[in-house]
Length: 248
Image (cartoon, rainbow, N blue to C red; front, top):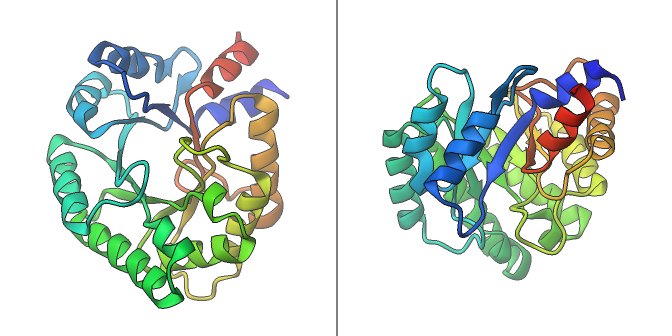
């Protein structure tokens, strides 16, 4: 893979630390690595309690700050999710990565599942200022079936999602090329999308070979100029190591 490819990947990374035991010093180090001699990652993704320190540490760098809500199980009430969202907005988060109620979608009746997803995503979108980004985590490794992944993606997009994201990284199966291909076809084929919506493969993406597979899918399905920081992200904690090794 060329240096040009590595620089492209670098600018699409949401550099993530969602370890249960991570500390403020870990987040400061994460933010320090987010902007380096070869360029910046797209964003850092941290727990809500670390948004303020991430905002302070990245100030002036152009690196966005993302956080997670309804994470990782997707079972919180809409009211409690909105409480966290509102605090994170006040604290300065640029992006919210929301786990949809995927268990209800997977295990409930179709009407219950659809309503749960639409209600959650629409309420969070409504709570966000226009300049903030909403990424919806479908947890594709738990939905498994392409038809259910497609349904989740369509519901999230129709309810206001700016990105559809594969995974939390907390389940046995995270991002797969099959799931991402299904999601990209939804983005390409839906006649009702009246705005730009992006995709975020997340979980288990650690090598340049991994990254290339996903970018090649996006280039093939959406076109070679489609995958930019506004439409494509990698959710990863280890991918930056591979990029930096390539650029060293």
